[in-house]
Length: 359
Image 1 (cartoon, rainbow, N blue to C red):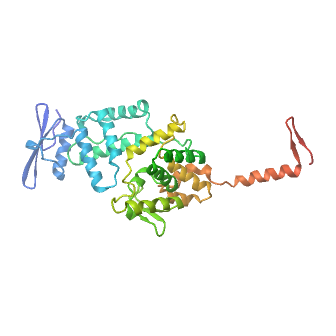
Image 2 (cartoon, rainbow, N blue to C red; image 1 turned 45 degrees about the horizontal axis):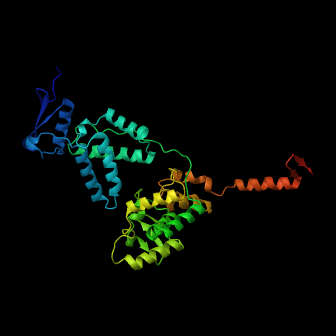
């Protein structure tokens, strides 16, 4: 039998840790030798939690860990979208089991979780990566606090495909806005316009506060963003009109600009509107598409790509370049040159053939 590290002894099927820290003896038990070594390191570093009787190690369950992590997220970032986190928490509970110990999460179970998300549920790359990040961050937080002995397992990520960018056509926008008006959903009508004209992410719009807008200068400043960098955009005429109306009617009764709007009801109305347009089977016709619409319109109007990157709050210019096919191209000049050449040579095209009139 290999010699055990000093401070660790085996008692039947478990291992006992006993070390002196600050003149006091600290003890704990663990199921495996590897865990016992980790417990001893945590005790020496002052990270071990003695909340449970006799200092016995007790890992958090999946649900306990999620609640602790969510409390932490809400404390450091009050604008955290709790609804989204709660949904991801339910996904984790459903797959792993709410009462499952974090120590039972290993490479095999994480790999099966990845297969579940990609093959069975067919979630998008962004959703899969968000769930993977949450799972790892939860484990990491528990591990540092002695509530998970094994090293946190990181799930593999998915590279988002650079496929078709779905955006609103002018006709789709007009019909959608008319539907909101005709069904007496004026609040959703205004929020729809706000997203199209600002390019804000859904959470950025719903978390907007009156302190973030300046009606005099027509500027909106986001301080808590996905990239961690604040950004400022200018209001279009119709956004300014909407915000002015809300400022007059709701500023005194609500701190947030759109807190009178229920996110679940906005989703419900969106799906009803999508069915009205006959697009219920278009999986890309989602609220985030309004952000795509803003980006494509900016680039299509000839705004330089770096300015668009700053407006949209993209982390790097490569993300903005996904929309590069909307940038007015110098190749347009090539088309004009070919047209001019054809005119000079007087190339005549008929239904039957192409005839060179003059060379």
